[in-house]
Amino acid sequence: MKIESVDMFYLAMPEVLDIGDGSQDMVLVRVRAGDWTGWGECEASPLPTIASLVTPMSHSACHPVLDSVLGQRLDSVADITRIADEVRARSLDLLQTDHALSGIEIALWDLLGKSVEQPVYELLGTWGTAAPVGKTPYASALFGDTPQETLEKARSAVSRGFHAVKFGWGPYGLTTVEADADQVRAAREGLGADGILLVDAGTVWGDNVGLGVSRLPALLDARALWLEEPFVSGALRSYADLATQSGSVRLAGGEGAHTRYMAEHMIDHGGVGFIQIDTGRVGGISTAHEVWKYAHDRGVQFVNHTFTSHLALSASLQPYAGAADDWICEYPVELKALARELTSTHIDVDADGTIRPPAKPGLGMELDLVAASKYLIDVDITVGGRTIYRTPELTS
Image: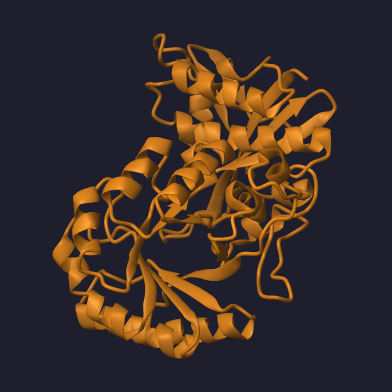
């Protein structure tokens, strides 16, 4: 097959709020080759990502991403690797490259899987089995504005059958140690004694280890499994320092990694117990799978990161679908309408309390393009009087 088109679509809610919720807009990617169409999603700001697809060449290491994809052959998994390598080489100095590549690479996997009638996890072929292992989903939600609201959110998640809940962002880390302790205590009360509690600080303390240390007593008392992203992604010394003091509360991070090397550095130098990788940001499914292998060999748990649609959720599960030791996964429960409505099929929690990627070709998700069209934002990019991008028709 020859790749005939690569299209990006800017979708957004009518109002995008200043909150830590990535489901409010998205870059939807469509790749066509022969009789087949693949879909992917970038975890990135839409306009810079679309611009990186078509931007005029600046120099030999700063080509538009599209130049390295359009017209390429796509007949095997090896072709996906070859195309991704070429994109990275020719767009090395274009800093949005890995974000744009992520959505394209996911779409290539979806398309190839459909064409050979295999799920993506089978095409990866690492574990010698066609059956993915069920993962324990944690209900991923923002902290409430008050401890009472957090308590009610936790109870709601338990009533829906979740055994694990993660609270993050919101007011956590922004005021006092006691206010944060109240939030954590409320989360534990709502979750009950046996539930798995996870806390996400959302990089709020920059690289200030002392601010993280001051929150540890409450986290330890509440038996939190992990403290996620206490610092910005590159603050590896701060991660490592806090990890030596956190006791049973393991550190988690990695969603900010947009290359395999960034993830490996966090594993090697950050002291994390859990590495959280977003296929829509790190470079796609292949790169996430490479990080899984690296983490597995070093005794670090791999966890998907996703906070958008179920198309992205399916993509995030593929890299470690058959890994029995990596048992937990993110499952967003507060999606905006755009993210919910993008797909007509969804990944539901099974009777045993776990989730798996769909046992269908490609990513196994059916898109609802009529619903998605309600959120489509038209974009024109004109350079020197020439239009280099115009939103295409959103069809299959």
